[in-house]
Length: 365
Image 1 (cartoon, rainbow, N blue to C red):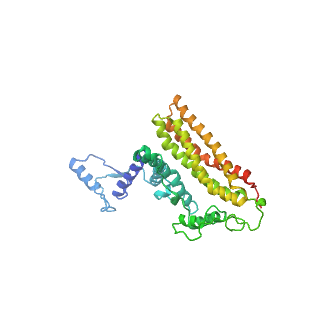
Image 2 (cartoon, rainbow, N blue to C red):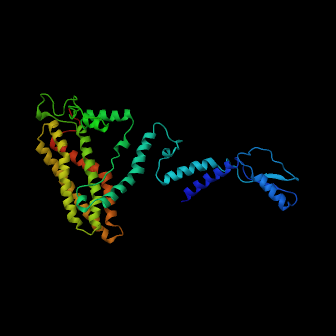
């Protein structure tokens, strides 16, 4: 790579330049012609200019003239070139400059965000490749049905103490994290009674509205939305990971992908129902509506989502037959697509049915 070669060349130039006492090249001109002996003597004397002999007097004989040749480092922008090449090499590897000590454009306000970008844009793509390689090489086909590898990088994405505690306070007040959930994130032991989720109305345990009539209870959907969004992200992440690993493996082996996909989405829907159970129960307590009614509404939304996704993945794999795209690549592309937008769409769908079935409204009481 030219960027790396240029960086190495400037480093070698700097080493040689300073090894010669930070002295540029010179040209010695003689009005006549030197004998071989005089030539060797002159060359030996002038080439002995090292750091130890720097700044000593040099004697010019027989009318010789000294002329400087080459471009001085400051005119050749030596330091700027070295700095730019370091940035160029970092760019090749998607490495944020501040990680290699280039702090010219780094500030205390943006260094945290740059660290997050380092995880999402530099480390994460390699972690995904490593996860897929371990899944492929370390697990048998039976194990692949129940086991998968995933690097947990949440710890690397944590902000400073003040930022973390502010986000914990919001999550605690709005009811989607308990005290013990927060303590686990901070590597602290659980406490008795720390699994209670609060509601935003008066910070009392969720579902306790005093003597308010159940039929009149309503809840602002912004309270339940973070819970639904969190569950949706988990479900879509699992779906995308399984399509990349298990689905690609079946398609690559020319297996019955359609049958596998049907079984996979049956299992995914069951897991989704279990994942949403606690959220449905919380919504039922908050609204005073029947948990069965809300559960049936969520089940219907999940079933529609499952049928659409099943049809889409079958279409994605079947369309590979007439193109150069492999089933692996097609499923990877589809998984990337749903991972980016699928969680938001699923959360919006679930929120819509919860609001409709639970009698919630956009403003609350």
